[in-house]
Image (cartoon, rainbow, N blue to C red):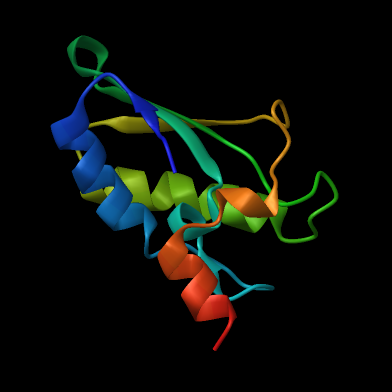
Length: 107
């Protein structure tokens, strides 16, 4: 699972917060599902840019998941504003699920 970032230290803090955002239909967090593609930290403007996807473009919980990502980042970085963009390029594939996520799903 490769996350593109411009700040690995801040990225670790962000990923820890994002592990609390659960896809309610699958029961797995957005990090282990492989939904987060990129996190960039714009410190001069106090913005965090997150690029993510969903398991399908027609995910009925998509808006809720995106909102959860935004809220988690805003909570972890209260002095910054999280700006989340949704992309389907490249489309999500089950191979993006982390090893820990696969263990969880195969219980």
